[in-house]
Length: 231
Image 1: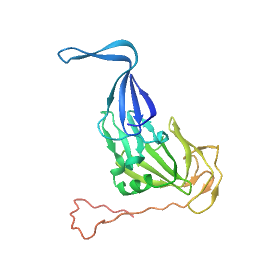
Image 2: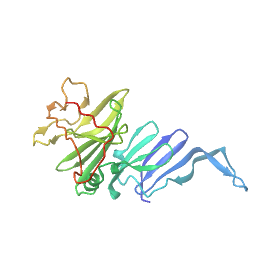
Image 3: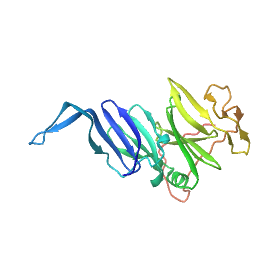
Image 4: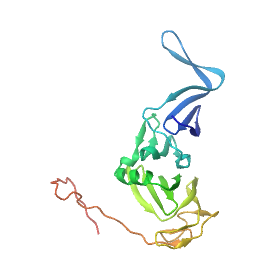
């Protein structure tokens, strides 16, 4: 299943992320099974117990920096399979890139020249932020559990992301933005949502746009039970 790229300790379990598989193991205890098949847990000198793989042929490839966690939900990418994944509390691996963005992430994650795939949890908006970076460009997006979808693109290129209480921080990296303007942000710590103006990242002001999808597939006959418009 490839090399071990990341280890994450959760309560008394250890989650092992390999290139092509995700597994769990008991820490500082071992499961003893009787002849009848009943199981019990007893104290043991073993550091890591039996390795139990999660269902699905998914791994973290060689991008452990895409990992982010909130509560018991773990987010990561599998570049080899061109998808973004979530490991749930029940041990199910769900392909969240399939929520309306399958083609986009398939093309982004399988392209040549990827340098980093940075993931982080934004505790301010409760979103998973993912930045796919190449030598010539980048794409930073957010996933919202509340709507089960990818809600926004961002104009910043982070090198690291983390949250402290309800505040979201990133460290920047020097790059050229979408309008070919140089942005000097390396080795600086930035607090997001602290500015009075929106779309202000790393001391650069960007334009905000909203794309409205109205009546997609117009040739298909649809019945709307409720239609509400405000404007």
